[in-house]
Amino acid sequence: MNGSEIKTELHKLIDDQYDLSLLEAVHTLLKKASLDKTLQEKLSKRAMKSEADIKEGRLFSKEEVIKRTDLSMQ
Image 1 (cartoon, rainbow, N blue to C red):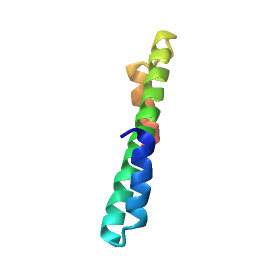
Image 2 (tube, rainbow, N blue to C red):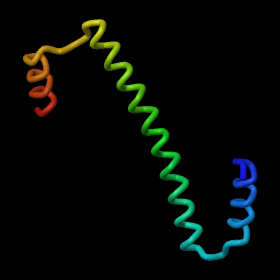
Image 3 (cartoon, rainbow, N blue to C red):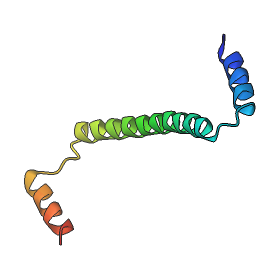
């Protein structure tokens, strides 16, 4: 089966399904997969930005981190 055939069959199976708990389980599974992909993309973008910042020397010293942390806790 190719992707299109699987989607078509899933649509039919879902349309014919009346068990709410099963529909909720499928919904949760598909939503989680979507969120995982979104989260992975966000984390990858952050990692790339962090690497670029490091290469460009955009860093904080230990003292700056401590100062910023202390200020944010007040």
